[in-house]
Image 1 (cartoon, rainbow over the protein chains, first blue to last red):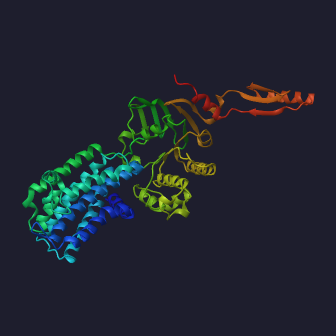
Image 2: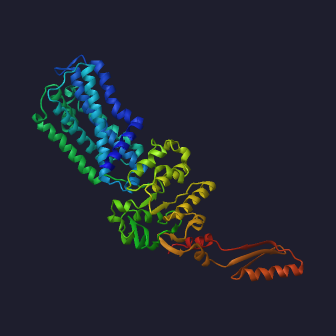
Length: 249
Length: 282
């Protein structure tokens, strides 16, 4: 436990010190919410108040950008610079290290989601859900699933140089077709079908059901199942393909 | 008990055999030099000893334990300065030392390590602002902060200028006097000669010679005495340089001659090294 807290503290310091990563993965969803909110928050989207609609999308986008893209980038950079390899030679147990990294990034995403909800509440007058505990559970489920996918993604990235290109090429289109920024109802049918297979569309819909329609999380176990299934896929890829060492040059 | 025991160690990558059955041991408190050209298998050997890689054959014991079955306590007894690899660019020197100190049960105080590696003035500097030599000293500091009994230094001075190299040698000597057991890999003969109690020469995955630096030099060809007479170069090879030189100079004095360009070339570790490593592959 002492080691876990020691590493968690270090992880927090490391995250906030790397400004670019903190900006792109933490701040950008908040900025997008403010920008898109002022652009079409007053409109109605699919019969729902624009701010309310967007808030759910931005929480989903935040999960993808922080716990998925941010985590993958952070781990690939550390792996390729040789830091992971060096940590493995210390008495810090690998499981403690991974747990601290995950706890750190999930904490950062929870903070981000809380800021998004607070902006919605106080700047855009978004009504709050009946069940806050369902919202917290949805956010935690999304964070865990995308974090597992983020670790899995590191197995597919070969170098630090190419890492942000690969990560952006995956999570930006993912956010787009999952309806994080606008309603996906106007998209071509192929994209809609593709979006429906991906975990982010289910996370956003689940968030929306909880926030807008005051549903409880257990009323939508089908969405929960899809999100969890993707998380398990990520976990399996992570356990098979995660490496501590940079690729041989 | 020896700190490290290696018997018949073999390691292959795909169809390339990097280490071809080597034996050596490290006695507690000694500096052992693994000397060899680039690509000889030095880093592979070190990486097997610290548990990064699995071997294909042979026996390896570090503190009596197979590195493939090592635990937390075992890792706490050693420190590694890898040949390459970076630390966290956004952490300061002292933050790095504190971070790594936290992984060990009985670390040295970070401020003490700071002094040991000579980075007191850079304590609050971010790692990305350090020079190459300063980074290397931080690498050493990070390896020392757990107060290890055994240190693996993988080419610790590659890329140093001569002044920095001498300073690093001084640090390594002071570590030895603290009682640390050190495995040093290097392709600098002078470095092995200066620092190592015993040396093994590794080339193409095989140990071709081992012993104290003096023993290795003892295997060298004879001393060569060179001079010019009547514009012609003369070279005498001898096992008795003192006697030959005495006769030579006595003769020259008697005849009133000068021995132009007189030099006595004693065999060095370099001669041994070159004669061993330049053998064509069988």
